[in-house]
Length: 402
Ligand code: NAP
Ligand code: MG
Image (tube, rainbow, N blue to C red; front, side, top):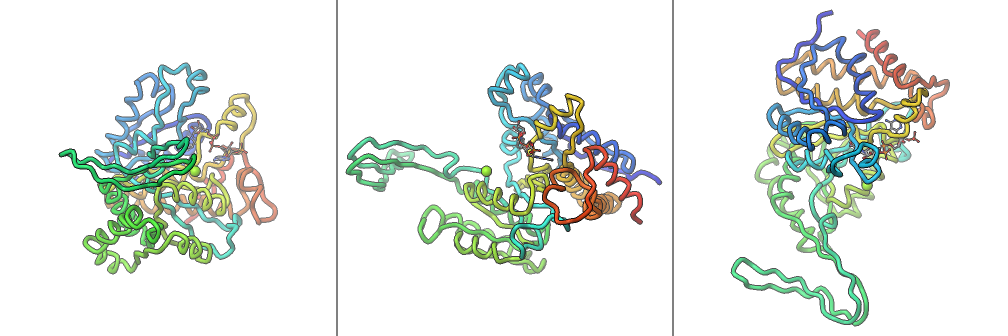
């Protein structure tokens, strides 16, 4: 069979530890035999980041701006232990944070739904995608402990020195206070990313805040979404047969529980942090979550939602067998290849991505899976495979498909 050609390169961001091992297996077994893989390769492995003073991360993000689509392997975010382990010059920042700061986008996380791995919420039939606003609020807050009686105020001083004040609280005893902010520009790009992604994936978009209580702060989020929707997206949503729906956060939570899934749930920063963990654990496993960063300018970066699976890597290094789930990393590749195909009008690449996803799910549904899934599946008679044999089983399924 002739290999599929690619006209435009895909930005490939390699990573660390066990996921770096899976990355190579996936390329060798599932991609290179079928595709003339055209990637611009950036090694975001911690050693290379250290060697280049993290310039390689910046370069990979700039390449994403140039080509439009990237696929990223999980990477180590250094902490004190890693600085020692890798003898780092500095505690380099999270690559995801650096990339997000350059591309400015929203992260969409969606579970991979497969028969045999049943969500805890029994009426959830389709994935629920969480879109988390990744700027501001309590994550950029400033706080104070108030030792005793006294007045706390919000003070805004404009460029001419005029002050506007708002009383927070007149304390009669000890207490606490917190100030947080957001900026309209960031909320606007969050809104556009969500509307674009909804159109892209043909799913309804839900957004919820606590605007009845927070009449200025949360209400601004609601208003910005509504204005942008009315001015730029209403007609496109209608044409695509999808809906934008705003409600209160408590109402949203209740509706999510009773829904059958199949929509995007846009969340403010804190809500998204909490709800994405709820959604992923209720759907089964972090190893079955994909994640894509969508920038307001239409750049895409696909990855798995989990980390580098350090514990498995040390077993691997010790020569022990591992059974690490590669599904989310495979879906990062298929997501990126499909998007590349879409942008280039490359039908063969798009069908390849669809087929590889089908083969992956069919392999699991046939009872062949990694240990993490075997522990939670409702299927009987499962075969637990090691990391490489699972990928080879997917290849066998793929080759047997028409
Ligand atoms: P992790 O890599 O997500 O793994 C935590 C645990 O979850 C594993 O020990 C394993 O449980 C299970 N697990 C996660 N992914 C799995 C998979 N694909 N297959 C099977 N089991 C899986 O988190 P971590 O060990 O806390 O973090 C390791 C490194 O990843 C850190 O240095 C962190 O900075 C980095 N990280 C990177 C990203 C990213 O690049 N996007 C995200 C998160 C963390 P068992 O041990 O019970 O088998
Ligand atoms: Mg969290």
